[in-house]
Image 1 (cartoon, rainbow, N blue to C red):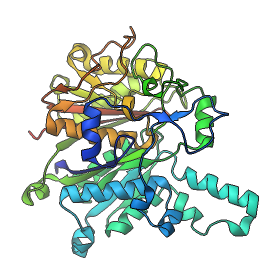
Image 2: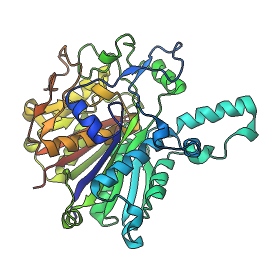
Image 3: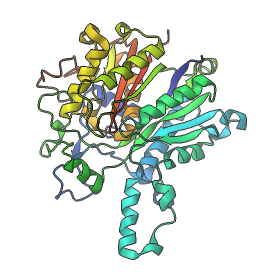
Image 4: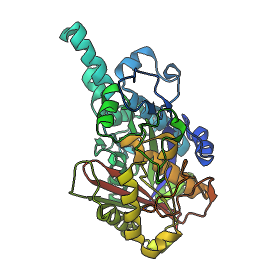
Length: 414
C-alpha cells in the first residue's frame, strides 16, 4: 500500500492570511475573536465571531468578487499558498499526464450562504429577472473544489464533501484513500467555510449553541473550561497538499508529516447532540490508530474538536479516555478553536494544518482561556503556554451534527 505525506500547507483564518502569519500567533495563544461588525447583531443573543481580517481587493477584482462566495475565495488563496509551499508554484505548467494525477477533495459544511442571502434579498426587492446569473455556480457547495481545480488546471477526481463539522475531515480521509489506492498521486484537500451571516447566527443562537459572552469576546471561546457557555462562530480555511511518499522524496519536497490513518464513525443517536458514552469518537480514534499500525502508547498529542460547549467537551474527554485507557493521562490535548472560533466544515482542515506544524516543529499550541478546571474534563489541555514536544504521532478529532465522528492520524516518518 502506498504511503502518503503532507508536502504543502495554506490557510486563511482569524489570526492570519498565511501559515507564517498565523503560526507564531497560535503558539502564543493570541485571540482572534471579536465583535461582529459586518451586519447588525442587535437582535441576536450572540454578537461575536472569529472573522478573517483581510482586504478582499488585494486578492480578487470586482468581477471575481461577484462570481465567488467568500468560502471559495478563502480556498483559492490558501490553495495558492499550499501549492507554492509544496513546490508546485504553477501547476498549470505541468504536463497533462501529470495534472491528470492531481485531485481536489474539499469540504464545506454550509457552502455559499452569503450568496444565497444576498440574492434572495435581490429577488424580494427587485424581482426574479435581477437575480445574478452567477447565483447558482457561486453558492453550490462543489464550487469550492471546482474553482480550485479550474484555477490550477487539475484534472483528476474533483468533488466536495459535506458532513457538518466533520466535512473537511472526511475530505482529507478520502484524499488519503485516493492516493493509497493509486487513483491519484497528489490531492489538494482540506475545507473552507464562511457562514457567519445574520440567518446562520440566529439559528445557532436559537439552538443555544453559541457563547453570549459578548462584552468579553477575547474570553468567550474556552474549551474544556468549567465556565464555557458555547462555541464562537469562525470563518476561514485550511488547505493541505497530500502526496505519495516516493514521489515527494524523489523531488526533494519538504515533508511535514505522514498521514497514517483515518477513522470515520457515526453515533446514530441524535441530529445535534453527541452520544453521552463517547463510543462514536472513541471508535473513530481506534480505527485511525489501527489503520496506521500505531499503538495508543505512541500517540503524544491530540488536537481536540474542543468546541467550548458543555456536552461536546465532556463527551470528547470521555471518548479519549475510552480510546486510550491509562495512557490518556500522559497525552497532551489542546483546542485550536479557543483562539479562532469554530470554522464548522473547515475546522478539521485548519486544525490538521496546525497539527502538521506541531509534528514538523516539535511544539504544541496551548488551549486559550482554560483557567477553571471542570471535573468532567480532566485531561492535560495545555493551559497557558505552548510546549516543546517531539510528536511521534498525533490525532486530530472532528465531531459534527448528524453524529459524524472523524479522527485523522498523522506523525513522523518511521
